[in-house]
Length: 209
Image (cartoon, rainbow, N blue to C red; front, top):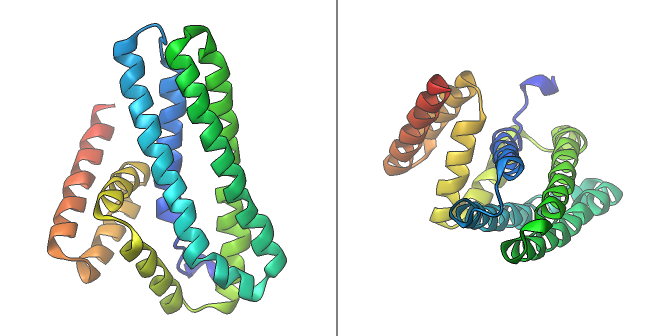
């Protein structure tokens, strides 16, 4: 049954959704006349978009060839959205720079961000349904884990550190516990220790909310 198959999208996508939600919430609350608030927000936006773009590029390198093997038309449709997202990211950054100079451009930036978030959310849902179901039909869990391992290994340590923070804050407590248990079986001790610190920070943040 596919309900018990390995889904390598699930946890990272929850982390990305959480960060997208934070970017959207903070943008809605942002007083663009306040440089002390706007500059840190734009720094976070730049860093987060860079990591989301890198995530898409890792999928292009490691998942697209696998999907292409079994469903070329699906691969073309799904991975073409990465090009759309790349264009939207560039447009967002352009609008962010305009907003930095002109506060009246703030709402146009916010609307562009909502379009980007909508594209991301729809795309990730397609990956977790159409792509994942295709891979479950043709690929073993062991091979799915190998693909995930190759993606993690291809990321720079600083990328993995931020992805881990997003994930630990973006999942439920049972998912967090299961993820950490799996890490203890395979990851270096220093990586596990870092993840456990982030998990504890996520728990404390949720308790304080």
